[in-house]
Length: 490
Image 1 (cartoon, rainbow, N blue to C red):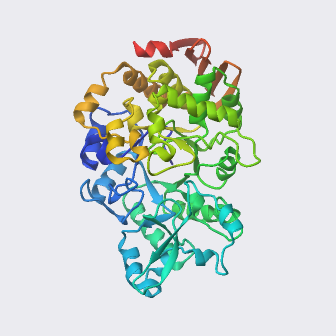
Image 2 (cartoon, rainbow, N blue to C red; image 1 turned 45 degrees about the vertical axis):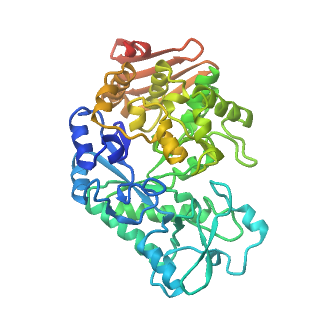
């Protein structure tokens, strides 16, 4: 069972400049006792593909430049360890797809990959194609000519270097089974089901989060549970979808929380945040920032479904992020950079808040008091700012928030008052027993209160957005201990 303590999200190489053993040394050294778990972002071969490891050439191999399965096993002995099961696709550079390129339908791996004909054997109409939900502009099919001279339209939900897996085929099932077994053998106890919402495609649908997808998630989750692992569904969608998905897997991400906190800080109004926290899944992981951008779709309307925020509020949210970041986020988002996403803004959370230390700690305090197990991204841990140099070099929008750090940068960052304040908040979240109790939230307009209670132990966060006042109140028997978030910066 996952520990109810703050977890770190990180790449092994980008946080240390080295690899998994160096990460272990960091966690056992300068960050000793800070985290209860680690989400180790793709460590597969290669870590430096076109999507920073989310396009694995060999999903079952650790990139030898950063370590071995033995290093993974060792890290999992000390911490809850999460790894990504990339359910939807595999790299076009994989040996399996290269074999398909040579032999076409005669390849032993032909059934591993999904083609248009697999889903639309009788052809696809323009209406059917227009109905398909895709996170990026353009067609979800890539025509590729194989060695037999035939051209096939392979399904590529994300990029033409990420070929979708046919998860219904025997070869597709075997492929994912092998990865799950490898995880189980090496102390990985939490599986993040990456892009799982796109795994099942059916003709005549939008091919996203179908009833069949829920069934598939049920089976995949049960399979992982039998191997001693919990599953986390990674899905960006309408907030009601998250509530439904939460009933089918061990845990989901609360992706609505990050934009709602920003909205509250930008407008001094907590109504949407309070509404969400009253209905949000309790079996969730909470984040503010991740290796991806700041999700927007999760709080907004979708089709004829109203959102937690309306279209005008979403527009204001995005434009305020751009303004706070001096338009750096605009350079990294949408058509301005490759790896285009329709549902997120690429920016550090710290810069989205205008690099305001108090606002940043208030945002983290709300995250830590919200229901769920909190995760802190390595860039957010050290209050990193937008990496415009890396963005200019790669022209990959999400690289703005995927910096390369080293021991000197970390040592310097640990002296910053905002980082020290964050570490104090993490320690409080990890150690106060009330966070294992019952949660309640109240508030309206510019104020809100988030409270946890277990027996006689209680802890409460009161925020007045208009006054920028945030207090943590600890109730221990008849005693009260007050901590102002602003005092954590001193």
